[in-house]
Length: 247
Ligand code: ZN
Image (tube, rainbow, N blue to C red; front, side, top):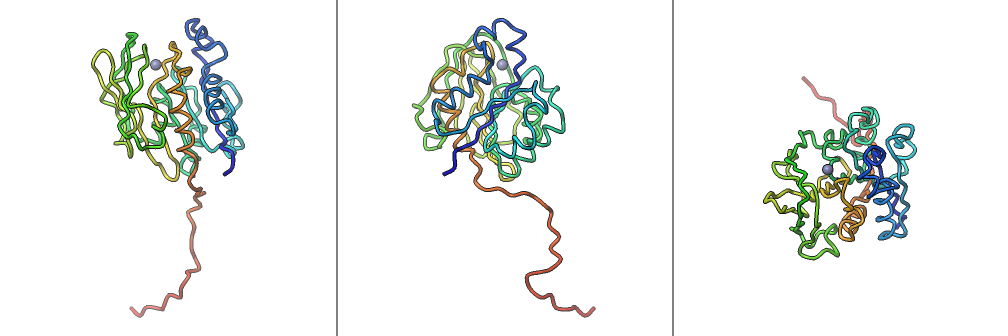
């Protein structure tokens, strides 16, 4: 099997504006997310790109060489150009995998692909999160126990304004009492999409071994199963003869 080509997209803004975030991710969240994938998928080709690069690092060439794209964004969703969001959406429909992390629920790319508000309930209160595996046989849950915990995270709660997932892999419980569908799978066109909730910028979540395992598993799961470049074919020559009709 060909090496998996993974592009890690990072907004890379909080890290430069908020000292508390820079303290946790001095080289940016994208570098730590990429490191985690490299650690667990040593044969994968992992490249990190950021919003600040030309075309946000998501040129036609880059996307053509991407099997799976991961997306972390928050405060600069609006700075992502519509034409780039459309380009990513098109690649997902063609077959590229997409892993949307945490506050990426409001990314243009995710909202376009879901077609819904993607809204949720939230609270920043330093609370414990327990992620329950609800589908132990799913490829994304491999290597994870019945559940795992993060000692402090932001809370995301229901209702989550997404279409019903095709497959539910994780459900989170929070110390304050809320629950949330924290690991969800969809297919759009030929592309597989996984949304994974944890990853607030002030917490060391992307160093956590279980979080890293889930993201690496998801990258493998989201590998393109096939590619269809849509051309809206006008099949002028039919495969069989059409007999003339008398009217
Ligand atoms: Zn957050």
